[in-house]
Image (tube, rainbow, N blue to C red; front, side):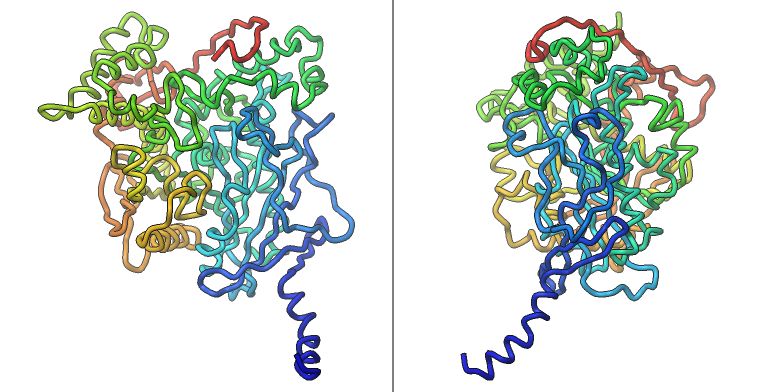
Length: 590
């Protein structure tokens, strides 16, 4: 390098450094991030690990989040925060109770709109038991949304017992993970202008437990003015795993096993334990309960986070926000088939390859009798209800000579219909009837290797996250020539909704849901508009609910409104059981 070239290089060095290390002044202090060049060539500014609450440790453990305090100097926002503490060993490595942080991805340029860029807040899933923002990275989110002029924020929240332990009373009512999310969204509102965002155009989006979280937040009165739109992918408050009082039973069993249940101060006793104490006691319980309600810990209606007595009442009272609800076309394939290197086979879920190939009608019938059509649900009519469920899922669509894969697929469809399809459809219909502009999508794109690995066709739970965020769940599948096409389609549809409240694009018009009809876009390489997804199973469960007075998707007994002409005819009543609590190791309960 000659002297002239060196002088020119030195002249521009400060400019290069400043471009690569963006700094933003927020109401709490300055943060410094880094630049990332998206695939479009445009530059995104990345800020990782910004606190939105004080660390929920020591005396703040098992308490509602306390907003973060101002910091001195400039915060180095270049590393993802540690994941929130979890109990399962394979996900617990590197986790911490000090985890309430957010990440912000923004365009480097200034918005043409004087109010700023629209904002997307992402809430990760993980069955309330696992997950983190780092698992979704920042590159594909930046590639998809920054060129569209959208700011992306991802947030973390407490998980498992740290986020959803509940004694069922005022001592420890639960829902702390939801309070974390609420606190994070409040901070996004406060930070919006600092990052060039428009706080009057905030969309919150989640998948699985993250989607159910969005569903909860959409009916929480305290959040009425904090966001304007929602995107809910494969998770709803209308599903039992997203709103069950069974979390009380799990919580009290954990407390008993830790010698805290009989303490004069349950919360103080739980606070005095170490993170390792709790993790060790829960060791061996697995990721999912061996029950059709698979979540160990989850939110519950406590009269505090949501004031209304029922979800239907809360939907009526909440702002009628534009809502985009989605599913994949083979949801529970994520659970029914063993996940490669992710979820081990167990008693109910995640069948190993050899079991899939040998799955029979008898095994499906046995599962329905032992796990679905139980006396505690259907009473004296459990046998009759079981007969109907078996007839519908084992025989109704059977070909002349069904093979074992047919019955395995029907096992998968049974789980999908209970856990995801029926709850999502119900929420869409309820919100449409209440006046929410509601839209629906079904993701149907499948990688060739997925067909090989999972044995049957269909996009499993979370498959759309590869296109949106390159999620860790499907990171092991090599990119195909069609993947960029599906990423572009997803980015266009989702960006349109974030920007306008309507997912329709220049080349695709997506009709809204009505109180009785669910038009939807089937997302594949050639998106198509169709109608009433999975209604064969949805209508079956609606009829079963009316006939037997038990709603399997909600896990609740129901009463039928007399002389009702509505397409939504049921009133739900929550039946609380007093949990039997014994002092044993937690693993003995699963």
